[in-house]
Amino acid sequence: MKKSVKSNGSKNNAVKNNKPAKAAKPAPKKGAKPAKAEKREMRKPVRRFVFEFPVSRVAHKLGKLGWKPADAFNAIRKMKGCADVLASTIRTQVGLGKAGQRNKQLAELTGKQIAQLKKLAAAA
Image (tube, rainbow, N blue to C red):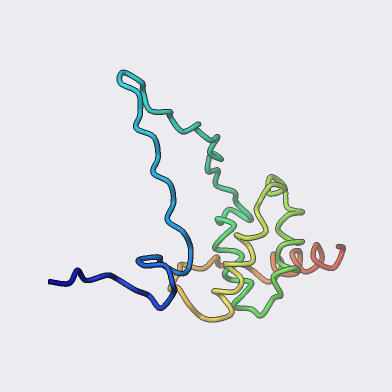
C-alpha cells in the first residue's frame, strides 16, 4: 500500500505557507518556576466634573450641539480640575453625541455655561 503524503504544491512535503517548521521549545527544567509577567501600573480612574456634570456627559452634549472635538477638548481642558482629561475621551463622546448614539443622560447646560465654554474654546 502507498503512504499518503500531504502536499501544498511546493516541492517540500507538509510545509505550510512555504515556511519551514519552527523548532520545538525546550522542555522546562524540573523544579523551575514559570516566569511571572511584570505588573503594569494602571491609571487610577478619576471622575472629573465640569459645572457639576461628568466630563463625558458634557462632551456628549457638546457633540449634540455640533461642536468639533478639538474645540470641546480645548474648552474642557481649561476648566478647573480637568487639565489631565484624555483627548480620546472627549473625542469619543463628542463623536457619539454628533452621531446621536448612546442614550446617555446629557448634561443640562445653561446658556451662560455654553457661552463660557465657547469663550474658553476660542481662547486656544
